Image (cartoon, rainbow, N blue to C red; front, side, top):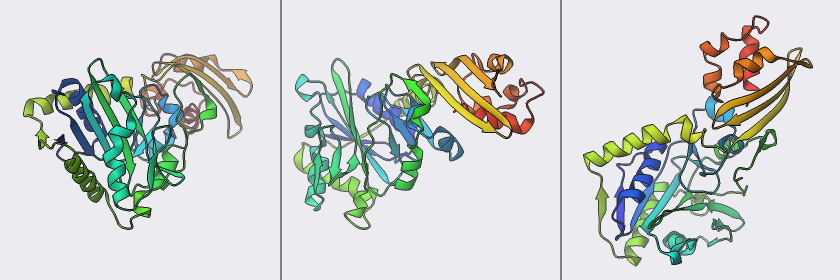
Length: 325
């Protein structure tokens, strides 16, 4: 087993790029493990509608980025109190969906520290009735990645607020997250932190696997990783536009004006809009929105706001845009 060194980077787009770069380019005649943490963010599954999974406006207001990974599964909150583990290996049919084999060192090291954990039928790690880890896999013809999260001393208040989406406003065929009660490992082992848990897992892997040291990326590899992070994992097209097509509906009273909104979103773009203001169809506003990027910061930018007709006071424009999410 070779440990991947990421220079302690906590930037989500870069760490996601490291995972993809490694699983697509490494010589997987050897197995690799990547242990890392991210700053505040939400990482959604490949087939999810990001807007359905997060409190989008809360994330924007609190600078919490939303990202899409290459594996399936549900949305997970990341912060520096959360440890992520990724196992990279050559694909074999016997390994597919065998989560227990991949997460064994994680479970074993926790059990050795008197934390009673188990892998449930959904391949999540639980302590008692509460979830501490979610897992997913990515598979190509000859390579595979099994990765997961581990709540050590994560901000669970922020986690709940971030993942508190009003899914009733969205209609799509996307993969939905399965909600579970969660708990930090630090509630079982008082005062423990991510670095300690990282070292515990590392020691368990070294104890039970052939150990071949660390992998350090070359300058050229870092250039490729940062290019992938920029073009893919920091792009609206991948993180939001890759969401399955969906319909958004909302009703809201703003001052003395009532609004009814229905939007059809394709690849992150508003392709159809129905806006009713005080019961009357507002075709002018509909035309402004159609073919625009379904993005709060973009729609509240000055070039877009200037398109609204005079009967929209300045204060009303931004309030109206917010009810589109």
